[in-house]
Image (cartoon, rainbow, N blue to C red):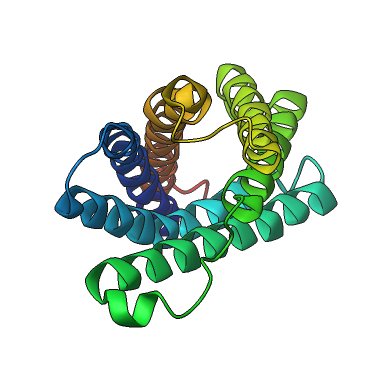
Length: 214
């Protein structure tokens, strides 16, 4: 698992940094940014969804000893949320690059049931398990719980029409998550995974160099 933890940790850091840029670009789009900015934003969403999948798997292995059932539930819901993000970004990107084709179908996940609703559930479960079992830093667990609640509120705001990009002040919750909670959580998580992998490697190397009792 050391190699995978390092890989997942690197992916988590990239998701965090990419999420920060994603959130900034979203704010620029709300302010009326040009089409290339929207294309970059959608591309980041597409790549971020792919990078989030190994992070979800690493979290499952880290949290399964606390409660295997809830850890598996967090994994499945998290993967579904990543798939929703991927499909939404892919269709949006296709529509931006090829408008004639992209305009033929309805947008995927228009209210963010996957991107915000399910993602919030998965993130809250991760935080709850982390706080409950100590497999991750407690502060990281509390941040995940707060992020999960914020994502759920964003989904409810989109569903009820309270959050509307046309009314700029209402997009503060998704921007807050995108430029603060998301990047801090994923970069922190990535550093934890990579540090743990490095520690495990040093411990194994030490064991190999111990003198035999015989």
